[in-house]
Image (cartoon, rainbow, N blue to C red):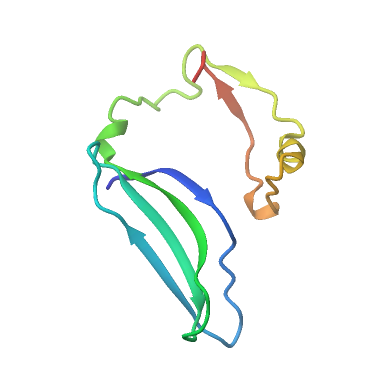
Length: 113
């Protein structure tokens, strides 16, 4: 598996002071396109604690990106997208990203890409 192709963050992974956390990362078997399911769970370090899903996604082989040429950025023909207020718009759709996840600085679009 060469890259994380898709990743959905479901819940933060909190590491409380003075207590342990068990983390489970699971990578599934390859499908017909060599992609694998990925999940990340945790629970408090005692037997009766429930597992919490933190992230799930897809791992893909690195070869799937061989055609991408990123030496020139933005790519030819790409148009800048106005991202003013993007985090407020996302919050209105129930996607609330805290300061640690608000790193978007620029976006470009090329055709329907």
